[in-house]
Image 1 (cartoon, rainbow, N blue to C red):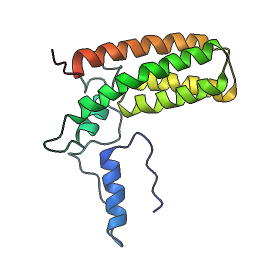
Image 2 (image 1 turned 135 degrees about the vertical axis):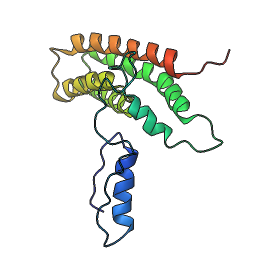
Image 3 (image 1 turned 45 degrees about the horizontal axis):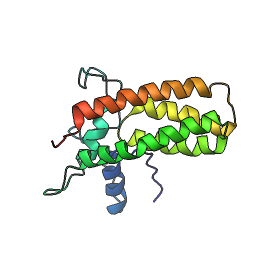
Image 4 (image 1 turned 90 degrees about the vertical axis):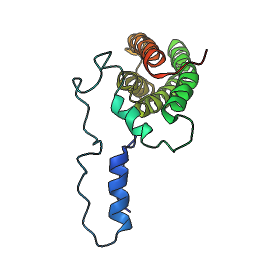
Length: 169
């Protein structure tokens, strides 16, 4: 198998790759127009409320993995993200303050990936920039990037809690 699928995985791309390799000698399947593609979502296609904070297509793709009779998968993934990501943001901040480039790289890398999986592109992009600073041991922009990351992360948390998480009272 020589196909490459980048993270975060898109269900339609995975399906096409599997179909190509599970049916020897067959031509590559054509994309199904009814299935989400890997194309970026236009801001006009998603909710008017904070369209740049989260890509709803990513959450939709997670929801496509939902099994009948099982707890809400999107809800569970977001709860895990909200439980784990504050530790990563704090680790990024601490590493930046102490010029610990290796720790900055590791925490930013993990935050980048987990944020991308849920469609939190702004947080993921800022974490990617911080990851590069850690990898290249370039400290000039770190403080500014950390400030931007904390702001983007706070906006994300507020949106997730308000719009996506069902709270039991």
